[in-house]
Image (cartoon, rainbow, N blue to C red; front, side, top):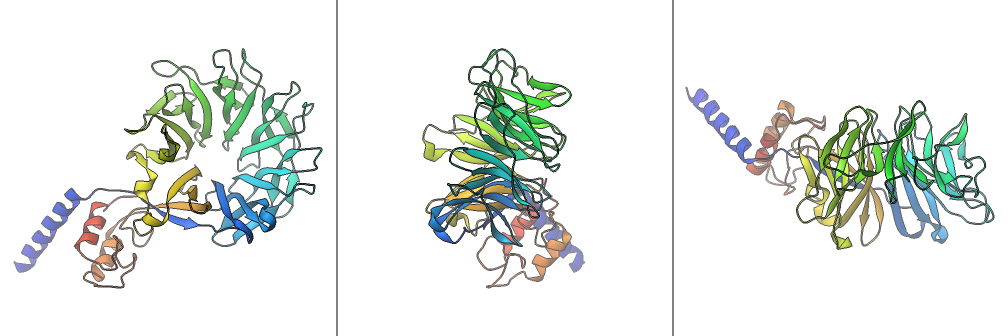
Length: 410
């Protein structure tokens, strides 16, 4: 009977604790450092499914060089094109570990995009044939080694392009009726490209989607009127996010139209979707008249919109200062930038407090691990069950774990 009563009391405690605790996802912060020799500076711009990031860093002489980083290799410089200006930057990396970006070439040529692989190094991708000026700027790539960005067309305006190692570069044109200008911002593994183009109704630009079969098309009207002004991210399911005339982040899909409109949080003036992964998690920037109050956020269908600063691992929250970020991968990891005092690239990795064995769910194995260390008065680690960073394992830690019991990462 005593055993039954104990079990009953424990069950009651669990229910009470679970009712007071809130399921949540937090983010660990891993800084990537910088190249030796220059002032301290690094930024990350993209992240692949294994957590490898690309970006740029200052090296000896304070020259900016394209970099990749992983936990296994650390920070690696990709070099630059031979020429008068030693400068390069990487903007996208795929799951093969291949990267794309820009480098300055000879002074009389200008800026040109590159395709980089570990085997062949940095390869020039050229420009749109017949262009009025030698210039190309890649913004994204997929796992087929296809690259998109903008170059200069025959009329001298910027034009979206698609490049691959076999066929080279082609221009994607623009939407009819407006200024003959376009930029490609993102693409997926189905070779669907999204970006911004001049159009008949949008002087400031209108979002487009392009594929080889249907060419360039606009998204159509927003619910309640207006239009999407840019496509900034697209996942492998064909869902797109970006900016629109209503000042909201959106999710759009070719067959379904606008399936989600995300309003800014109270106190902010607008929301723009930056990227979206295959699990429908979206990175968002929240606008504010005071530039110092602009914030980055994450959104998913279950938890809605949350400011990232409120979700950082409590053990390092005071050390991250201001966070900004770019793209995310299908694991929910985000390529981020931390500043001030020094601008530094970082990787934000989501976790569920209480997932002690880090298998992306909080289950009985985690509860057993915490209970085996319950009452530890000091020196406790996260794996022991210290979930509130006070070096012990107590009821507060148990409450956090039970509040998240059964939770899994998206």
